[in-house]
Image (tube, rainbow, N blue to C red; front, top):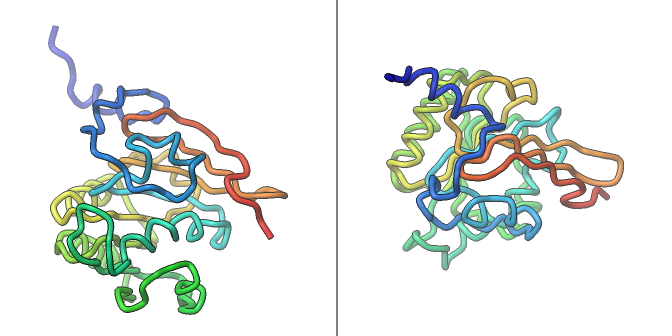
Length: 216
């Protein structure tokens, strides 16, 4: 019996469908710096050469804090494999002005930091795609106003081509929208900490991690 490939693809996109870890290609992940989170990610960390989506109710709930250990390693003078030299860490259309002293305190090499401020939303996605595919950026962070499934696929392909890591920040109401991202998670602030809900993980299982790190 011939199967409808579009129906099968839609089924596999469902975040509640678990696919074996072999789908990850046995590529090691980039450690998040949080052992509790690494244990629940295929490869033991952030997926490399892929798109990660981080959904937030509002900015400042820990969406940057969760990335700092990995970004620090990628921008270091002695970077992690497979990078032979430190790559650029590009921020495309951040909704705030990054604070250099705080980034430096987190271990970010400021000499490898790029801030890109496109004119409109269409240029946000285009700029991120070009940066990812260039082969010179170890990570590209972007804050698009809108991002459909087609745009996510283009970012995923660009990350694979440039062997880079794409991180897109989106609102929580985007959770039900289709996406080609290898990893999708939501970050929520609770009374005593930050909770992380992994609702799509290619090669992994959905899980909610309570109080991943404490709030001051």
